[in-house]
Length: 429
Image (tube, rainbow, N blue to C red; front, side, top):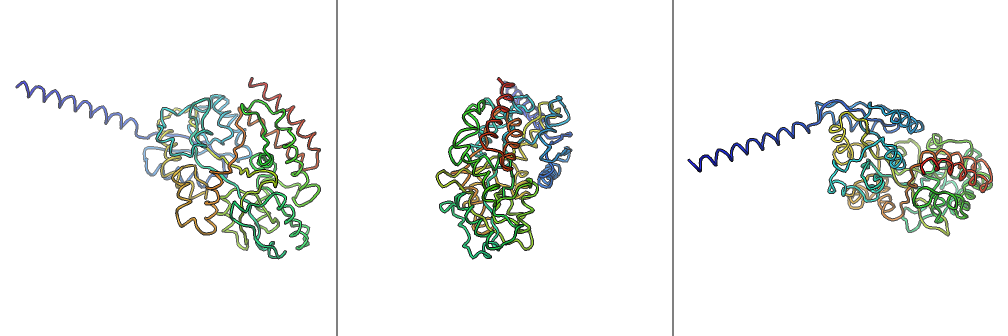
């Protein structure tokens, strides 16, 4: 009887334990409604991942609220700055992670993401998603830039195509000379040699001074004087001014929304652009294109734009368990694969980066561009500055780049930017 009593006690304890586990599992099953705040340019890929998540979790409804990229940070500022509880998951650009966390708009997620899970992301992306020692924004994707070119315009000038090998990277000086030759050969005033996909935006313009060893900020992200107006920074910006005002190989009066369209219409020889453009360019009838690595200055080193979108847990979320379940699905699970394939985007996960280098699917054009991207991500990637004042900086420096493109004296423009940014930085001291 004594042994029977012990057995009954053990069974009872086991039942209680199993009941507790089942209860915990039931509580952790995603349910209810969450809202994702995103931007319209990623609609198709984000919606595809949302649809798949809801199909796998029939008790969940995921709403999507979107704004154009050009208005997105303003929308986030207005909505989250008012302590809105209407949102659960926030699409967060790499550069805004620190600012959103500093302002308390997104919460740390260390308790939800284990060290093993974080190790699945590229280390640089984990660092970019960390603020003051806390992991606040797991990465959704990465980015890398290449220099796209129009093969028909090269053929018209009788020039050889540039190499896809990073060891044979063009210099920015090469780009100017090749552009001049092709423009002279085609003799068409509507065709230009070079433009940037994100013209006047720091993402693609900052790598110019970065190539010469210049940075916009001090390491702590709180000083610009002596950095943004350094001799090396001025030298790079003088080149940027000259391609528009002296060499005349780059168009003025265009915006970022015009760049890809001009290239696809055959009006641009070289376009700096995100690698995922291969998807659009491959579907563009009549466009005969190629790619080559992002250039560097002859007396500098390669500095390739990097960094992309993360996702944050809104501090006002009323359904954090389901929000976290979606965030994991979106960044680590099947939802990430769906997003990447739909968007043609570049991965932030280590296993996918390795796949680019070993899978034969990426051995041939155009998917071979991802092998180049994988190399650049590990060897030449140069992120934008990390500062709590990035939003203010981006507005000021974008206007500064535009002024330089339109012929304003480089020293005058950069000194003015330093004064304006210093005023904004004082708010964070």
